[in-house]
Structures are given as structure tokens and as C-alpha cells.
Length: 402
Ligand SMILES: [Zn+2]
Ligand SMILES: [Zn+2]
Image (tube, rainbow, N blue to C red; front, top):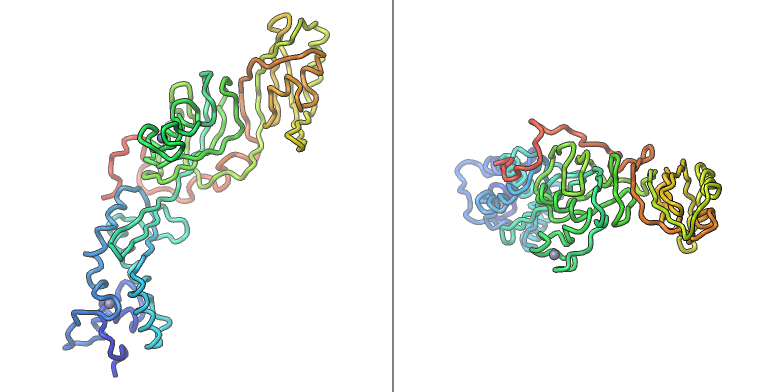
């Protein structure tokens, strides 16, 4: 009796179940097992003819991958459950527990076609593109790995909040007026960077991790505030960005792709300039009390939680009879307006000067991430250099693979 025990099987299924060796060569092995002189059946008990015509029937569904840039991929397969059941049944009846499953064969063959078509290779760990081929209707879904972008921004205009409000047209769901980003792209740093990054990468949307934040009216100078943006559903990747990107009042510096999101919380220090005005005049003697601030520690109360923040240095310059500028280098996370007015921060300027003070605004002159805490530093840049010359950002209509 033949090993397939009366089951009518196509060459690929025969070779897959009763041969051994490279899964891609099942069809050839099946022909050998069948032997000369025996006709190939027109039907297959398990796959109903799927395997011999796999490339013609399922290949086209993979062409959608051309819309994405990737060097590594993985293919998953959805089969009709009846087909998978027949495969299990034959493997069980013929005691073939070790033979490759139909699903594994189909995934390997589709991976082989896609690899030949694009030059990309299979990676089961963290592929740049995950594809699910649905053989029930010959369609495929494409899930590109998010791109993580690290950079810094400076802000030279007032009236721009850091975090974006959800788009008024769609409440964050994505609509045509917000370019499907779900965020109001004009009125915030987040919106401006989202618009640029998602446009450059043809990504669906961006989610941000900021190293501290500032007021809507604050400027951010120096080398800028670090941030990391995760771009979801990117069509492009592996881009090299110019050292600076000007987006109106927001300028991006040192934009680059990194492996992973930063470990939180990120420790950092800020150099700030506070504009302070008191209710009345302040004498030079009174103002001199500010000299003690450098090297002191602030107790900051957030509800019932108490945290300490160091003031590393402080200096001041008078700007009027009852007003002055305070320059400080402090740990990240000091609520500056409350530090001036005196609510829930101790010591504070109102207590120190013995008069009610208010903060007219604060600007950031520098933000420094403390050692070991740079966003995206963990894992560094890509492990593996890309083949070929670095591709510049922009000109994204250029197809990368054909
Ligand atoms: Zn078959
Ligand atoms: Zn919208």
C-alpha cells in the first residue's frame, strides 16, 4: 500500500507530508515520490488544488507590499478551517506528526515569492513588514513596524502649545481636514511635528514622548527640547534627515530613527528665564535674598505626593522697580508659575521676597538630558547598516523596490 493510504494528493502536499528536506522543494519531492508513469491527480484531498497554483492565485495579493519600504518581513497565513482540518486529519491518520503543516508550507512559499520579488529577507523577530495573507479570499493585510524618531525642537514663536488638541473635525479619529492624523496640525508643536513626520514617512499618525514641557507662551532655545515620536503605519523607513528642519516657528534638530522608545522617566535639567513682577517695589536688599536659591532644593507638592527638585544655579537681573528676571538651572519637573506665586512649592519667590509675585512667562534656554537618559539612546541606532547609499528624506514618490 502506498504511504498516502488512498488519499489523493497533489505533488506539493505529497512531498510536504512524505518527504524531508527544504520545505520549498516539496513539489519536486512529491513528483519523485509519486514516481514515473503515475499521472498527477487533478484534485487534492487536502488543498483542493491550492498548492500547485499558489503563485498565480495568491501572488498578486502580495503586490500591495510594494507600497512599503522594508528589508525584512514575515508572512502569516489564514486558511479555510476545513482545509487546515483535512491537513491535520491526514497527518494524524498517516502518523505524520513531524511533517510540515500546510500553513507553514504556504507561508514559506509566499515568503519565497516575496523575497525574490523585493530582495527583502524573512525575519521572525522584529520584521519591518508583517503580512497576513488570507487565502480564503486571496487578500493580504500589511502591518509595517512603527518608525521611532528621535530629535529636538526649538520654538521661536509664542502662542503655540506643546501638545496638540484633537482635531475639531473628527475628535481624534482622523479625517480629511487633519490629513487623517487626528490632531489639529496648526496650533501646536505636536501638530507641526506630526504633520512633517507623518508626511515624510507617509505614516498614519504619531505619538510623542516629550522630555518635559513648556507653556503655550514659552520659547525654547539652545539645542532644543528632546522628544521621541512613534510613527504608526509608516510606508517609508531608513531615511536620513537634514541637521535642521524649519517648520515655521518650530525648528527640528538632529532628527534620526532609533530602535526603541525611551525608558521612562527621562531625567533632565532645564535652564530657564522667568519674568517675575511683584505687587510693589522690591529693594535691592530684598532682591539679594535670591542669591540663596542656587544649590537649594524645592519641595513640590502634587496633591498628596511630595517630590524634591534641585536648583543647581540661580541669578537675577532687575528689569524695573518691582520686576526682575530670574535665571535658573533646575531639575526637570518644576512648576514655574507655582514656584513664583507660592502655591504648593517651597521655598517660593512670594515667601522669599515677602510680597505677592506673579510669573509673566518663562522661556527655556537649554534642556539637558542627564547621563544615560537620552531618549532613544537605549539600543542606539539601527543594528545593521542599510545596504546602498543613505536615502535622503523627501522625494518619497521614488519607488524603492520593484
Ligand atoms: Zn495539495
Ligand atoms: Zn480630523
